[in-house]
Length: 71
Image (cartoon, rainbow, N blue to C red; front, top):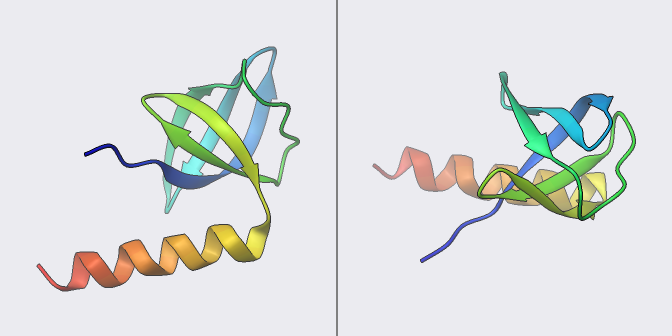
């Protein structure tokens, strides 16, 4: 099973973005999308695959947090 995780773009440089995932910052390839700083992206295997609306991203972030609490 594959999972894509939403994160917030905090910095852009060419086709690379620094994306914040709940306090963890990761470099992500943005060659498939054109995000702006502050927007949310859906990331799979190190690549941003979709620019997301903030409310939809937050919904997924909340869902992943709930799943984490079940463990």
